[in-house]
Length: 178
Image 1 (cartoon, rainbow, N blue to C red):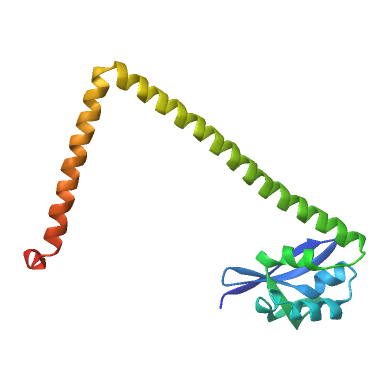
Image 2 (image 1 turned 180 degrees about the vertical axis):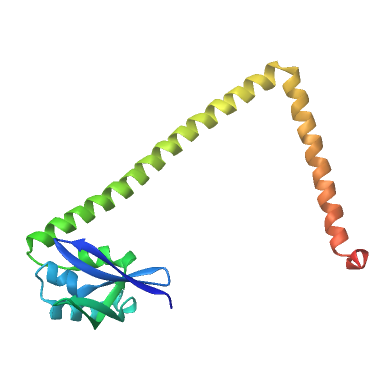
């Protein structure tokens, strides 16, 4: 297992985290300390949670203490779940409320943009489909070259169907390929 440690700033405190085989593991205890939350209580609640208990991993992390690095076993979550876990925390804590607000705004902005953008694109595509259909109808009625194009496309489709039929028959005869 390839591992290395890094630091991040969280709520004015330095938090050690570990990179192991391409996944960043964030220890929960230092975040709870940075938010001034009851570590024991929230670690227990996290371990009991049906989702988070399957994601937790106890890892040995070198923690800087009094100019020494000391190995500590810490309960960690992968980075991809840490932000949701912070929203899972519940306390009348100014720092936590501020952080949760930021997380919820980011989620809203991401999904709201996705939903409204998709709706706008679907409406635009529908309008384009109507214009294409109308143009085809007009060309079909008035343009002889368009009629020739349609006839060639239909003939090509027939030839392709015949080729597919021959290919299926050839596949049924494996001795031809030996």
